[in-house]
Image (cartoon, rainbow, N blue to C red; front, side, top):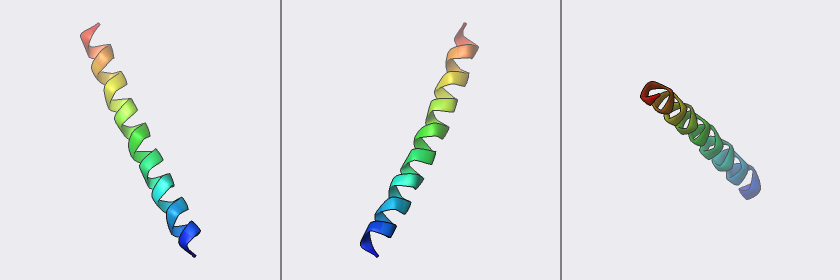
Length: 32
């Protein structure tokens, strides 16, 4: 049960990281 909760936390963190990467990419494109 603990591992399932851990997997969910990792998946949530991965999604947030992807969103942050997309924001950074958009900012870089705007600079160019």
